[in-house]
Image (cartoon, rainbow, N blue to C red; front, side, top):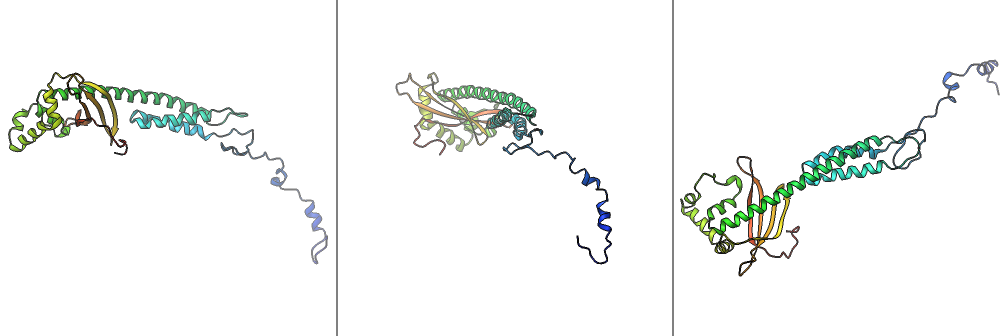
Length: 269
C-alpha cells in the first residue's frame, strides 16, 4: 500500500484491528427470506405454503350464489364457484396450500344455494305454466259464451281494468265510443269464429305452455287446437303476468291469433 503524505502509517493497521459491526458479522447467519408462492407456475420455496387464489374466488362466487334464488340467469354464479373450487382442490406436494379450506366452504355454498335456486325456479315455472293454461282455457270459454266485455277487460293492462263489482255491460253501453270498441272487438275475425264454435268446444293443447321472461316480465305462450270441429284451427295465445293496483299478480291476454309458422327466428323478431 502506498502511503499518502501526512497520513500516519499506523492508521491502516489500526482499522484492520477494529471489530466488525454486528450487522456485518451476522449477515451470513441471517435466515433466507422466504419466497412468495403463486398459482401461475413460478418456482417457489417448498417450505412456504403456496397461495391458491382460486380458493378465494370459489368462496366469493359461492357467496354470490345467493343471487340464483332471485333470478334464474344468476345460476351461473354457483357454476363458476364449482369450477374454481375443483381447480383449487387439485393435488399438491409439500405444505398444504393456503385457500383449500375456503374452496371447500365455497363449494358447499355453491352446491347448496345453486340447487335451491334451480329448484325454486323450476317450481315457479311449473306453477306459472299450469296457471297460464287454465287462464287461457277460461278466456277461450268466455269468448265462446259471447261475454265480450269480460274478454275485452282481460286484454287490458291489469292496472287499467275496471273494478270487479262494476257492471261491465252497462259500462260498455254507456257511451257510443265504448259501444263501438266492444262491437269491433266482437267482430274481429278470430273472436267471431271462436264465438260461433260455442262454449262447449274442446280445446286441446298442441304446444305446451312455454314460460319465459322478457324485459323483466313473466310471459307464457301456448297453442290450442279444436280437433273435433269440421275446420280445426291452431290458436296461439300469449299471456303476460302483471301486477294490478292492489299489488296482486294477474295474467293478461297479450295476443290471441291464428298460429302461423314463423319465417324468421323469434330471437330476431
